[in-house]
Image (cartoon, rainbow, N blue to C red):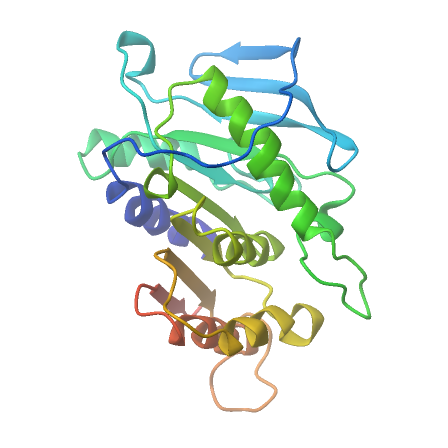
Length: 267
């Protein structure tokens, strides 16, 4: 389900991403220097990117468009969590094969070119991908993780590569807890992320606190486009209504937003 979902998410988000540059009001502090960057064709690996906010480091991989080195154009950016799983050969939880899916869609003229930034997780994955503390699992450093992306990773990427800035050109995406933190990032910072892909999101976290807060929010909806999906075999069906608990949570998240692109599939 994740790979098929990814196929449509990337197409849906980047195909309709903005084409005009806009101002970016993301804060930028002192950017790291002297980083080791390994190059393998269009794939760049930034080794041990440091975070003063989180007090740790991780690798970041950047996949450049085929036309990047032959011109001067700038490109929209998609930021992805669980970076070990994004590009081949994949990581502990499989592989999304983003690069091959992306290249195929671009070659068919179905997708605008974009820069893909895959941010690795580490031993703090659960704390970093969760915005609140769950009584059973802990966590709750999600706000710091989003600050790391917005205040440290994004300014560095913008300073070193030709990117289009502003929410119309900036998307964020992840699955499971990565989907949860993507939803949190976009709902708390719509001035930064104009698109969010929330794949099989763990909305169950902390007794669905993020969902409840979102449903209780008032005022006009922020101009963010969401993709929210879940498989109907995910999470069980404790109430025996034929819809899995995770699909029910995804439907709840989608119900409040007219901009949502939503799909629930059977596997």
